Amino acid sequence: MATTGASAHPAPSHTGRVGPVTRRMPPSAPSGFAGRRAERALQQRGVRDEEDGYRCQAGRGSLHQDSLPALRHHEITDRGPGTPAPDPQGESMLLRRAHNLVCYWRDGSFVIQNYLGGTPVSLAPMAADVLAAFTEWTTEDDALKEFPEYDPDSCRAAVRELHTYGFLVSEGESERDALLAEHWETWSPEATALHFSSKDADYTESPEVNDDFRAGKRPALFKNYPTADRILLPRVPLDPDADFVRTLYRRRTHRSFTQVDLPLPLLSGLLAMVFGPSEFLDGQDFGALMKRTSAAGGARHELEAYVGIFTVDGVTPGLYHYNCLEHSLEMLDAAFTREQAAHLCFDQSGVGDAALVVFVTAVVERMSSKYRAPRAYRVMLLNAGHLGQTFALTATALGLGPFQTAAFRDSEVEDALGVDGIRETALYVLAAGMPDDRSDAGYTAGLDAFRQAVLHPPHDQQG
Image (cartoon, rainbow, N blue to C red; front, side, top):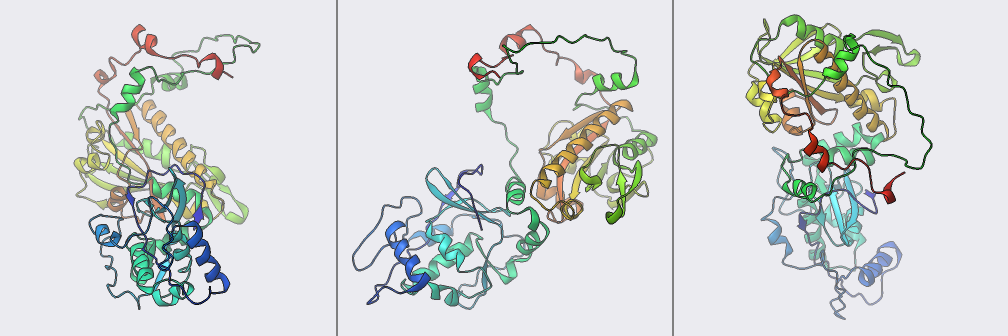
C-alpha cells in the first residue's frame, strides 16, 4: 500500500468511520507489536478507552457505532458486474487487502482510495493498521488476533466496512485486482494510480473557468527573458506551395463534416501511413521490431487502432480492428453505429458526423516488458501524441479533416472494443471525414481578442 504526502486525487466524496474500535483493558498491556500498536492508537488516533473514557478529537474519521447503517445508503465503489455481495457472517470469509490502494492526507484528513474504480474515502488512520493485517488471504478472526486488546465485535464491524469500500477483497472479487497487480506491477503504484484513478472522468462544462478568465485570470500566452541579449532571426520566406509547408499550415481540428462518402483509397492510405509498418528493424535480443512514421520509445509500438467506419465507399459500416501487418480491417461489430461513437465521446460535436473514428489503445506489456519503471508510462502517452499528430498531418495532406479528443468514456470504449482495460487500455480517440470548409469561418483572432489576451507574464514572474 503506497503512501504519499500530498495528492492530486479528487476530494473524498464520503467520510467513513471505521469502528468504533473500542479497547478492552486487560490486566496489563500486551507485549509485542500488537500491544505497541494498540498503545500508539490509543494515544494518537482517538480510539476510545472504555474504562478511562479517553477520547481524542479525531474529527472526520472518528469512530462511532452508528456509521455502518449510514454506509449502506451510499454507492461507495464499483465492485463490478456479477461481483458477489459480502458474506453477512464474514468470520469464515477469506479476505486480502486490495493491491491497488493509495493513502494520502487531504485537508487534514487521512484518505484511502482503491484506484481501480474506487472512491476516495476519509477514514481514521487506524484503518491502515487494520488493512496491514490482511496482507495475505486470511479470515477476520485470524487477522484480528493482532488486536487482542480491542473488542472483537467492533473490530469485525471495521473489517466489514473496509470490505464495503473495496479496500479488502474476497476471493470471488479479486480477479481484476490481481490482474492489475500482475500486468502493471513494474509501474505501480505511481503510473498505475494516475492512469486508473483518472479513468471514466465526467466530461462537464466548468462555468467558473470562464468566469475566472473574464475576471482577468488568464495565463500568459508567451514567456520571455526581458533582460537577455537577443539575436533576431531572419524571417526566411517559405514556399507556400511546398507540400510539407502547406500541410503544416493547413492543419486544424475539424468538427464539421459533409456526408460525402470517403473514397476507399483515402482510408487505405491514411491507415497505412499512420498505423502501418514503414520498415522492420533487427532488435537483436528483442527480435524484429516494427517502425512506423511516428516516433515510439524503443520501437515498442504498443498502440493499436480500432476503426469505427460509417461513410466509406465500399466498406460495410461497423467497428473494425486494423491489422497493420496484413493491412486489413477485421470486423468486430457490424452493429456499431455513429450514435454509439458519439455517445462514447460524450456527444461532442464532430464525432457523430465523421466518416471514421479511430480508438487508439495500448497493449501495455509491449512497453512494460522492456521499460520496467513507472516513467515508461509517460513514454506511452507521448507515443499516443506522436501518433495523433501524424494522423492529423496525414489526413490534412490527403484533403481530409482530422479531429482528436481525450474526452471519452474509458470503460465503455474498452467494453465496445472487447478489451479488458488492464492488459489493453484506451488512450486516445481520432476521427476524420470530408471537411465542411464553412466550419473554419470565424476563428481568426481579431483586435478584441488580443485586447483580452495576456501576452507576457508580469515582470516578477518572467524568466
